[in-house]
Length: 291
Ligand SMILES: O=C(O)CCC(=O)C(=O)O
Ligand SMILES: [Fe+2]
Image (cartoon, rainbow, N blue to C red):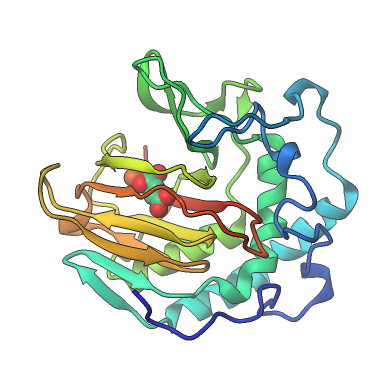
C-alpha cells in the first residue's frame, strides 16, 4: 500500500533543537551496536544469536544520553507533540480503528532520546511463552504496569522480574502522544498505565492474537511504529475472520478501540532492510490502560 510521499529526513526533529538530536549515530536509536539494549542474546526467526550486555554488569546510563532524555522530555515538548497530534490527518481503516500516518516522524530524535534510558534500565528480552517456547519478538515495558509472559501465563506486573524494580516511568512525551492520539481517534480520557515495547528483527513476526490481558476493554490500544515497515494484519472477532493488511511505516500511529478493540491482529515476518532510525529493526510501542 503506497499512500504518502517519502518521509521527512530521518533525523529531522520538530523542535530543531540540537539538544534533542541524539549523539548515538549511525542507527539513531541504538548507535553503532544495539547489544546494550538487550538483556539476553537477540534472536531472529532462524534463532541467530547476538551479543548482550548482562543486566547486573550494566554501568550507569551515559551522561550524554541522560541529558538528551531530559531535554526531550520537557513539558514544552509534550505540549508541542500534543498540538501536532491534535491536528493530525486521520484515516479510518475499520470500525474503531484509525491510522494517523507519519505523525511521529518529526519527533523521531526526541523519541530516541526518551527511549534509550528505558531500554537501558529495562532491556529488551525474549520472554518465555506459557508453553515453554521463546518469543521471537523481544520486549520491554515502561509505566506502572508491564506485560509479561512466562510459564505462569500472560499478565501485567508492576515490577521488572529482571531487576526486581518497578518498570521505568512513562516519559511525559510518550504519555502526551498516546493521550492525544486516542482523543484524536475518538477515545478521549485515555490515560495509559503501560507501554509495551516490541522489537522485531528481519524474519520475526507476531501471530494473530487478541489483546485481552487489560482490565477494561473500553480503552483503546494506541500503537506507534518506528523503524522498518511492517505488514500489520487486522482481522475480526474470530481468528478465522478475513484480515486486511496495513503497511505500518516509521512514524505511524494506529489506534484501535471500540468495535476493533478485541479484533485479532498480528504482524507478518519483518522484511530485511535498513532504517536510519532503528538500523535492522522495527520498534513498536503499544500504549495501554491495563489496570
Ligand atoms: O507490532 C505491532 O504492530 C503490534 C504489536 C501487538 O499486537 C502487541 O504487542 O500486542
Ligand atoms: Fe496485540
